[in-house]
Length: 404
Image 1 (tube, rainbow, N blue to C red):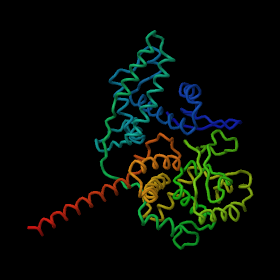
Image 2 (image 1 turned 120 degrees about the vertical axis):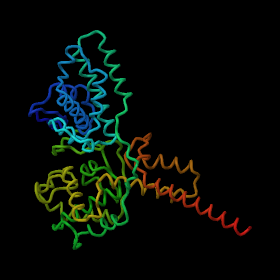
Image 3 (image 1 turned 90 degrees about the vertical axis):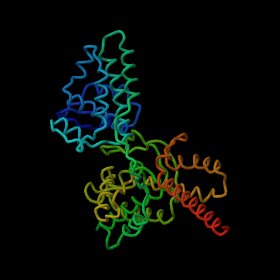
Image 4 (image 1 turned 45 degrees about the vertical axis):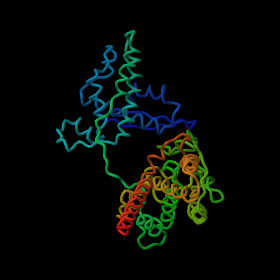
């Protein structure tokens, strides 16, 4: 069976996502999306369906007809639930190899992150509850569905905890490549066309200076840049959006200042490069294709390919993605807050951080995401504290030696 996920756009701009099997929409996942997920963005629908697809992968692996089981008023046993949730820990590639009947050595199993596994488990729990309540006939089906959901919620997936510290901000060497070797006209620039060179430099520069998401970048309008500021707006179900996978703003709208030099480069791109393409004048999106699909809005995949080409040209950029630039922006925010509030008390500095960072990053005011994104800064601060402590201990030893 061949399963894939597709996004459909209606005439009014509303988008919905379908899970297809052999080219045909699967009935109950489609019903689930239309009844339970219609109020959320297409990108979130897509992510949930990817998780539900994992459920169907497991059913195929176990030769289990889930819908037939539920129609017979039989829910999954506790052992089956635990097997399913362990299956959620494997990458899609590992799952497909298992489904094909390949016997894997223990070290051949590849795991996803704990966060990814948890997202899968949550989505599958909600879909199982929906499906069982629709198909089962027994009077106590509500109680059974709640009991199974409780089992799933209490279960902790058996995923290795990786303790290795990963550097998630940019190194000085990586910053030099982005700010120097990606300049238009540089002999090592991997793109030959001047318009593409400038566009791709702007992509890196905007993500570096603002920390916005890839989808937010792809959704920028030309008029979103005004007076050395970039405004990020939510435009879900936009009738002007023609791309197959619509980029979306996940949470908060915001306006972020940018450097005057970046603002000038954006003006040059819009007036001298984008403005010379007839097709680009038919839509408001800032970044467009300058080769294939000339003038049409850049897709999310096209932005990913820009980073892939840059990493291929410069080994120093290994691991640099749009999301890593977002991590680096958080690192810069921490340093800026330290500088501006250097004379403030720790509580005043923490309060400022809680106000400033969520706004700039587009998080909810109550978000705790900075605890995840600010890893490098915290590591550096811990290192400074240890060095300071060691210096103080050595000084006391020296003073004691002199007194002796």
